[in-house]
Length: 216
Image (cartoon, rainbow, N blue to C red; front, side, top):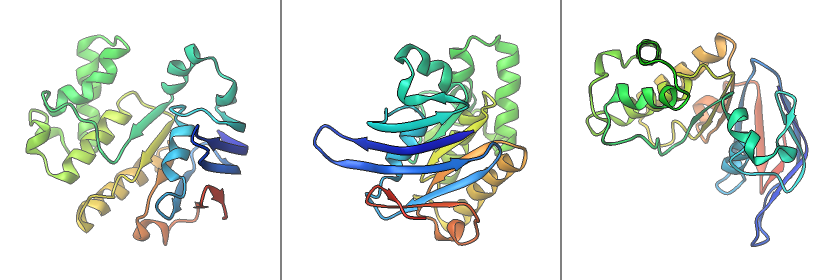
């Protein structure tokens, strides 16, 4: 599903965020990316999501080398992904249902089917009763669950997240971990960058970065 070989990312200022990393993540596997602040976790997630392009090496996702893809092909590749960021990028002028509907509107799904799918996604994260709530009226944990619902509404094969529990209290963080585990259990490939030790200590598949190098 995801295979990196000598993957590197160097920025124009000379900073090398990822250095010759090689790893594989199987279809349906759940992997955590961890390391100190500045280790390269966010950069690696952006490379996997094709938001950043590699400077060297290869990165295959579903058999396609992201480093060699034409820019016009990237939007089609991204349809395989659900993306969850620490700053959820929710639209403050739209309610919960409309935030989740947005990806389906972009791909042109008929409105009746889009609403059915959006409500099903909200139900999976426990927010169906809050579908008319504006993001500002939701707690931090609810906002993160809303971001997850929006990420999975297109039924991605790969769910990528960057520090999804970083700003949450212990109870909310536990709820978010459980949601990601539930998607993993139904066959979604899940990759999460995290500092959450409660998650890392109990997980068998962890990629550890140190100044851009994969050390474990």
